[in-house]
Amino acid sequence: MSQQVISYADLTIINRALRSISSDMSNVHSELGSLNYKHEQLEDELLKLADTFSDFIKADLKHKSLQLAETREGNLKQDLQIKFGYYSEVRRMAVGILQGVDTGVVSDDTLRFATEEVMIKAPGYWLAPTLIALSAWIRNDKDHNQKALNESLKRDDYKTTLFFMLIMRRLGRNEASLKWLERYFMHQNPHDLDREFIIILQAVTTGIFPPASRKMMMKNVKSWLDQLMQGDNYINEQKIQWVSFFEAKKPASQGKYPLLEKFSTNWDILETSLKESQTHEILILYFKNIFSSSLDYTKSIKVQLDEILSLLVTNFDDEELPLQQRIRLNELIIQMDGDKDAAQALMDSEKYIFDEKVDFLQMLTNAAFNPELSGATKVTQALSISISLPWIIEAYDTFTANSRNRVPKTIELSIDGFKTSTENGNDEKEQLQKHDNYWDDVLKTELNKLAFPIGSVIIGVLVCLFGFWCFSVNIIAGIVGLGIGGVLIWNAISKNKKAKRNINNYVEERSKKAKEVLRGCIAETVDYRQESIREDLKAEELRQLLNSITPEDFASISRGTKNILQTN
Image (cartoon, rainbow, N blue to C red; front, side, top):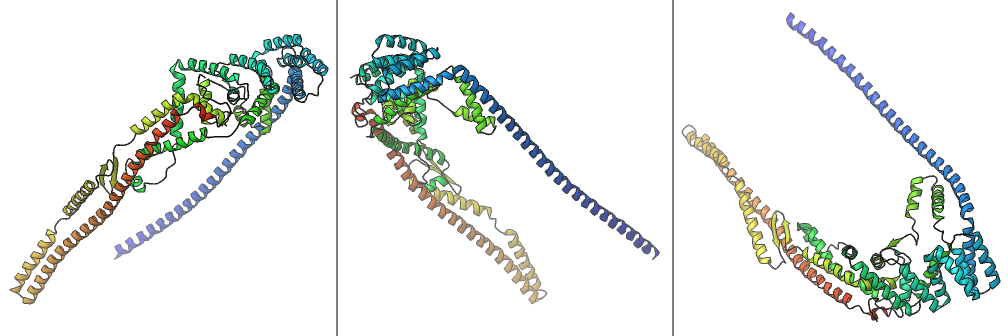
């Protein structure tokens, strides 16, 4: 008895100690939770402080960049004024002289005095002697005109040529315009053409320049084509671009074959193939739209030519460009509130007409792809395609061949475990038989997995035997034993039959649904193949369209326009 009391007393002390420890641990957990919370708060505060400090540093840098840009802009403009200040006066004078020529209200003496003064004040600037030559030409002073013209050509032959070519065209002096145009073509390098050349090309094509200019243009263009086509690189580059262009014209997904999209394992290939065949129709409409245009772009081209003349007169000279570019960068930094990266990005994105140069074939391709972005019109687009037809057709043949080679021979299907392939859907009977065989095998496999309940039947039989034995002892016990054994046997067999029925019903339901899907996939396969063949046949229609382009195709676009490759 005393041992039990001692044992009870010891357990009480232990329980108290455990409760005390538990209480202490709760306090520790509570403290730890409080510390974690304070740590998270401190971490958040530190992050906020770091972000604030980072924002402060960025703002300070932008503020300093802004102040520095404002200072530099002022200093650079001052340097520009000291070094090239009179150039801007010459440019303003050039604009005034051009306006005076248009209106005819400026006297010859005024023109002579003004232009000769700029010659003295702007040594080395090509525009100064150019204006003197123009003024002398207006006064019919051949001697002064020739001297000033020679000096202008010596300072900048290309700009002087372009200037007088545009002036003569503007004034309707056809003979002089042709001579300057011929000199302009001599300046051109088919490997490195200025962007404005595409406008000159379409101006000649549309009859803005004298009719004889077409023959001159064709002679030069054919010579350039011969040069560029001697090597494969230039032509191959254009072919690659045209193939990529054709591929980019593929239509968007249309969802016309939902079952194939869901149950065909190679649907991505099938869809790509169909899109490529549908591209032919899109390309037919694309080229027909170009060659069926009846708009007259003559006025807009004249405006563009005058814009080139205006830019030629008013643009900064090469000597000024470094300073002007630095001024522009600082202006953008100020505009972007000191953000130098954003300012530099804007600076990089700015393009000027005389800075962009490409080879002749690339210029044609640019105009054909997107005339608006390349500074051309629909006229030039049609002309460019006409010139480029040989390699466009080759590229289109490559695109068509690649498309046909990528057409999958079979359509792979996977429907609820049933995997099959069909070429064109004409084997529906065989596919359905194959499908039925598959599900028969599935049914057999599932039924084989269901074992006969022999254990339960043996137990029932043993219980029945026990019941027979009980008859010798007690009839009621024997009857009960036989009844229980019979029930066990019947229940086991009944459950087995029910399980078989469930498997049959389940497999039959899956098979029925799968067969419906299979029939739908076969029907969609037939439609898919028919559409693919039908769309592919349009490739020949487009090829005939491209091959049938003749000089008359341009007649509705602009007067006198012909295929530039024609010799007559």
